Image (cartoon, rainbow, N blue to C red; front, side, top):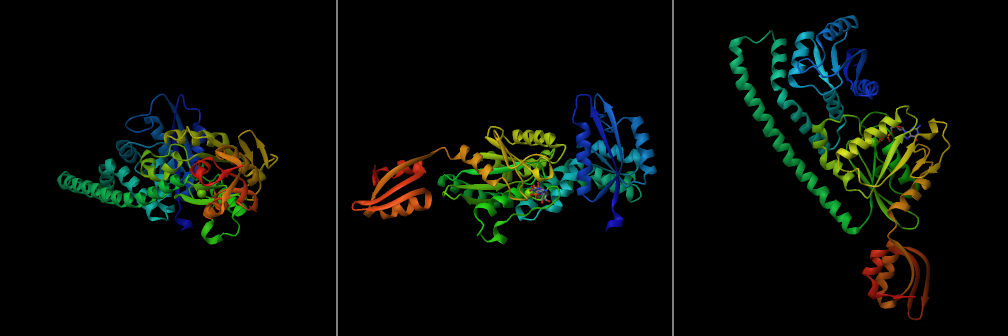
Length: 424
Ligand SMILES: Nc1nc2c(ncn2[C@@H]2O[C@H](COP(=O)(O)OP(=O)(O)OP(=O)(O)O)[C@@H](O)[C@H]2O)c(=O)[nH]1
Ligand SMILES: [Mg+2]
């Protein structure tokens, strides 16, 4: 496999007002690497407007062709999503394979998808991407096959129409299967809402350590849980997580919340992909609180925060309160664990800073709790059991008229059961 690795030249056009260009090229190169492609050269062009027919200007094409043969490359990767005709024209001018940022991301997602839901979502996104590009694909196939003559063109187009219909049918079939899967999850989500368990979503740039942070929290507060079952998958690669996993965390004082791990973000996430992953990402827009995990050891971390914030906005989740976990502090000079307003320096790997993070969480989602002292008549014994399960009991005394509890409970529970106990 190693020997067959493709060699790529990456190319990008920098619009006059684009300040994050260098970073986006770097990111493209990382995406290529995640796709097992070696980047052997790089070209860029400053322009006021993207060339609608070839993406880059004519002069640049010459330069690109020279670099391509010089480096013995096998593919050209463009930093933006190209139109079908741009790909087609570039391919024929350069006489080589041309792919764009979107295909790279789709390929990585395709390779990583584990669950049926993730696989369906990726395939829907791929088909949507392919649909308007069928002509181009067919032509490039035709060229490889020795060129399609005029005579073949007619049959080709009929074939094309057929292909298009087939793809549309397939998309519809996949989507209906997806809806069934998604429906189940939405029911679960509604159930959780009814139980009023707060939902916290872990978001952030890909590879920041979101899944590791989930695991560190599980380990800290629910260490006896069956490890195999509870721990989520982590790995040093882009997009290790493509599915949402939800874990319940119960703090020592019995306050409970749900922690949700999500897909990592990257700049310019393809529109079709966001749409296809809508149901997965809905968890984010319905959360009570977001924890943005940032890899503070990465020199580009500010850029990552920007990308994450932009993506959250696109998902309609920018109104949700957010706290920051500056992760991987162990790789930096920063002192940790340390809290600064709404951010905490921590290390998920060393499981350091979880209590500090929890304190930030508490301040934000457990405001609707109240302390009280009550007397529960013995005939309401089940209420004592309920509070033991759902409240933080500070003391219990058995008195002639009932059980005396000093506790901290949800305001809503207090009101719901107000008639069944005596306030002291
Ligand atoms: N040194 C150090 N490494 C960490 C820390 N937290 C996570 N990592 C490493 O960073 C890599 C990515 O961690 P993940 O938890 O998979 O990251 P993620 O944000 O879930 O990534 P995606 O799901 O791919 O978006 C892994 O190799 C982790 O071991 C940390 O606190 N310190
Ligand atoms: Mg992950």
